[in-house]
Image (cartoon, rainbow, N blue to C red; front, side, top):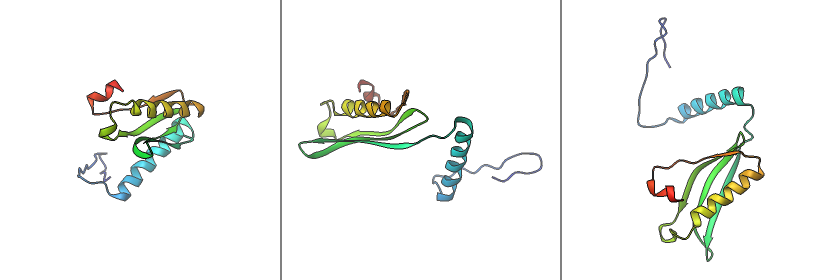
Length: 116
């Protein structure tokens, strides 16, 4: 970021993420969070869902700072309505509790996901 003596900043908006930009922002945020919250003890967490030996979806996330963070939850369209998403989420929650988690973070842009 460029600044002048008056403390004003120059902003740049783009439609892509440069790898060095992403490293800088992620690294800065990680350092800030460590200073504020202590070590994250981050661990990946994945739940794979199979039906009859075929992969039909899964959940990808991680645990950190005693929270479960769900990044993605996807079930193949032809497997919808069978409770696989709810079972994947329940399995992730069970594992998160074993890891000492006390909360979970999940967001979605799909209003139909509220039923999950």
